[in-house]
Image (tube, rainbow, N blue to C red; front, side, top):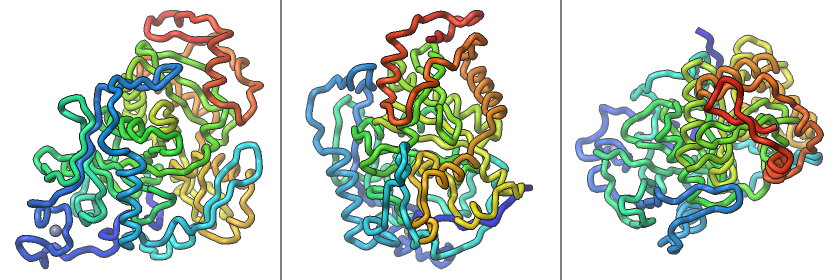
Length: 447
Ligand SMILES: [Zn+2]
C-alpha cells in the first residue's frame, strides 16, 4: 500500500478533536450536531431550485419562469449566511485579510498567502493509491459537524417553482443535501455542498450528485462563483461526498486557456481539450439540457474512478463549462518523483490550484510567486502527453464517443491565451463543417 504523510486541512471545527462518543448524554451531545443525538426537531433554511429551468444554449441563458426567486440565492442566502458565520467567529482565520495578488503574465495566476491554514498540524496516514474507498463512519464526516456550520438545505422543488423556507425541519429520512461552511476558507464564501448528507456516500461522483452541483452553479448565476471537486488521490481530504465552492471576482487562468479538438456527443455535449495550459484536461460544454451535460461529465468521472485515476473537476461559467483534469501528483509524491523544492512549499495541487488560484503557505513563496513557478508546479500535476492521450481515448470509449483518426490540431494552435472561450467556439463554428465520425453514429466532429 502506497501512503504518504500529509497534513489534512481542517474543514469543520468538529474535525479538530475526536469526540468521545460514549460520553454523549442521551438526548443530545450538547454540540448541537447533525447526529441522531441532536438532529430531532432541528431546523435549517431550505432553498428549493426549479428543476425545469434550462441550461444555457449557445447564445443565452434560458429560464422558463420569469418569476423573481423569493430570495437571491448567491447574494442574500449563500453569502449572507456565510457572512453571518464569519461574524459569529466560526472560521479559523479571517480569509478576507489574507494577502492576494494576481501574478503578472498573460495567464493571471492568482496567489494567496495563507499562513494560518495549516498551523495546526495533525499528521495522518492517508491512502492515496485508491480513488474509490468505502465510507468509514468512524472517521470524520459531515454528519459530525455542528448545525451552526450548515447554512441551508438545497433540493429540487416539487412544484416547479423556486421556494425558500427560512425555518424548515430537517427530514433525515429523505437525506437532504446541504450547504455548509468550510471553516478553513480559501476565499470569500467558501462553502461545501454535501449531497444527501445522511446517506453517508463516499467521495465519488455519480450522475445525481453531479447534476445537483450543476444546479447549484446555475442557481448562483455568477461566473465568479465556481464549484470544484477533488477525488481521493487528488487531494480530497475527507471521504464523504462533497463539492467545494467559493466566490472570487477574477477569471481563473484555466478559464482563459485556449481549447481545441472538438467531439460532440450524441446528446450535443461538446468536448474540447485544453491547450497551452500546464495541466492537460478536457472541457465540456453545451448539450441539449443540463441533464445531458451532467450525464456525459459524470460518465467520464465514473470511468476515471473505476480505472483508479485521480482527478479534479471545476464547474465554471454558472455550470455551463466543466473542466475535467486527471492528475498524478500524489502518485509522483509517493514514488519520490516530485522535486524537494516543490515539496517544501507544501502546496497541495487540488482543483483550485490547478485552476490557477494558488494558496501558498510560506511568505517567501508568495513574495517570489511568478508565472514560471506556478507553471512548474502545475506541470508536475499533469499527466504526461502520452498518458493523457491514452486516458482521453479510454474516456471517449467509455462515453461512447470515439476520437476520429483524421483530427487536425491546427484549428486553434495559433490561439492566444486570454481569448474568451466563447469567441473561440464561435470562430470554430463559423469556419467548420460538421461530419459524422466514420464508424460511429454517436459523435459529430467539427473541423
Ligand atoms: Zn449531537
